[in-house]
Image (spheres, rainbow, N blue to C red):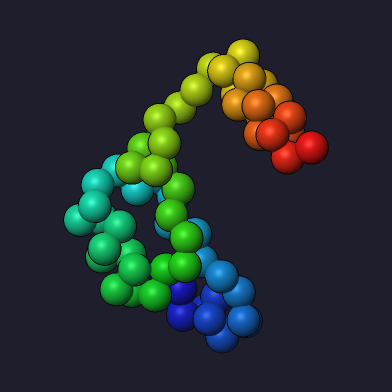
Length: 59
């Protein structure tokens, strides 16, 4: 994270599964999180449905 900060980059924590882990990462200066805590994995069909729904709602 220190290197990313020095380069002016944002940091993403991957594999975040619990609130505790996310709070630790935020305390360390992490900007974004990715993992089970934020959303469970979906199949390709379900993903396309979600994207299609979001795209349809935006137009």
